[in-house]
Image (cartoon, rainbow, N blue to C red; front, top):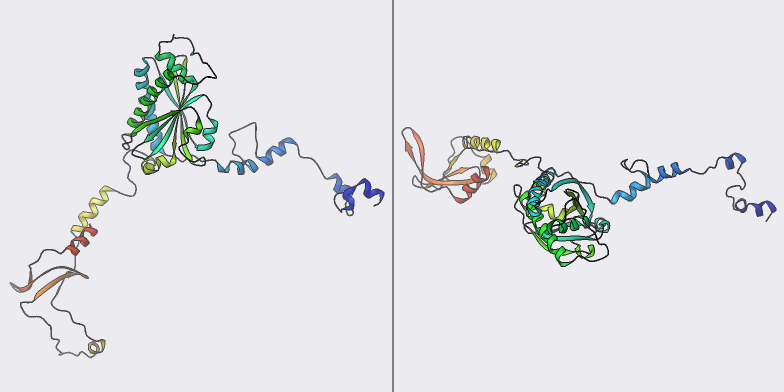
Length: 353
């Protein structure tokens, strides 16, 4: 190896600085600055609301986009109003409930992001045959205990970190959760009857797993203020829980019909009853060869296997409606029906209606 190759090992491999490389090529190299690196990766620390791009967009592609469920937003607005009244009666204090936001999350990601300590109430939606979560944060737990046990007004609830919740605290929170679940039942009642029954209380998110980590869920964040005290309640409903009533939740307003108009339905039924229908009276049927049909001439006679007293079939298309006897009324040939409309004809007319 020459002295030049020892000084520049890449030259021996034909790489940068090797044969065929000029000084202009070496001078054209440059290092990306931090802004260019952030742009390539899709990071923008200045504005978190900007749509992600680059590698960051690929990473975040697993996130859930919130499906617009207009009726669900109305249900939760109704829940806020009901909770404001019921929690005021429950605490005998001035309570204000506000809806922060409704978002869509992955169930596993949300469980890992729950700030501890907290109490997780697992409840069952009986008619929907699935579960949901109600998360009460630490601030609200201590505030509720302080209010219900006669704490002083104007003083913040004392928090003692690093210890499990006592039986009294769990019982008081359970009573509050039952009040919220009852309000949730009343909020869903105009849309559909759903009973939310408390199943258990957990303090460890791992024991509150009601869905697979990758499953999508609706997260509703509620803020509860009691003068200078308060906290958050978060309601988590997996999409699998809402799937049986998804069509109802997609409605823009209560009672909206999808692809069905009662006015046109009634008009169509009225028109069908007045529609003219072709009916044939069949005396006899015979199966003859095509050759004989082609040989028919004027004056030829076809013998029917029927007598003046033979029953006549009344048909509409290929459907036999009824049977009767042939006769004469005034100057017209008539058929008197002697059997009720048969079952097949009834079903066919019912389908037409």
